[in-house]
Image (tube, rainbow, N blue to C red; front, side, top):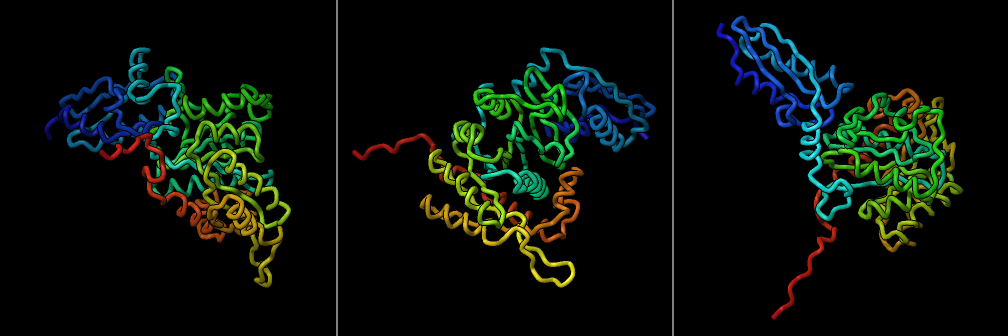
Length: 380
């Protein structure tokens, strides 16, 4: 059998995507060297972005698998090196493609759908809904990013089992991925870990959110979700300022008292000139395990009440996107880092979440409804 050619090996390497950037390592300047001996043994030199790159294992495995499939290859050795400062600067410049201070999703030409998941109060399952919606959208084939904007009460890393910290490349933050979702949170930036409190005042909260949006390399996202803290405080206002095109999704429970509070989170959109994409009712009725009759543990009608009230107050139709039945497995999945839409896809709650994800995620990317900043020429 003839010895494998360098061209064939290089073509195989072009099929290997970097796990964080999702682009071919050949395009990213990560291939240092390729050598092939007559006996079919191949040595590949790969540049890592940083010495402690958490993706060194997956990269090695992907390179080995791709090159091993080339005709004539009998063995593959992968040698890892680290990019120089100049190489990292070139990589950063290639990936960013815009002013570092800019938030790409706020630019007039952005095609990313941005949804800010809000609630009037805590305890309604907003973060669980957000995490499952993100995973469901990723399963649909969409490129999804998730910002854990609840700086004080961040919980997304646990819910999605995000254990790896982000990689820093010349000040650019490469977000870790979980279940196909790119995730950023305050957690990895706290030296004291989960138990360390965040003692930020308003301006620092604004700056933290701005860094999550501008300093993180998100790539070309179809959808960006933000898990907002409950209420109408600093982060909600900063989101409107930094992402004026973001649409609000209000999460509530069936309880009328909770619905009254949820309306406030939605009516904030009137002051910030944002659109409310819809309302999600979590912890809705579920069938009794003994008799099958529906049980309303947390009351009934709250989601419809919020949608109807917001439609009236905002003067625009605000739909009830879905009602998610109460399911203890949804909570258990959050605690274990295994989203319900993956662990138990046939559960009624999972199906309701997927249906909501379909409604929000299948909306076409485009410039419809966006200001293009142009003025039609006057008639002669």
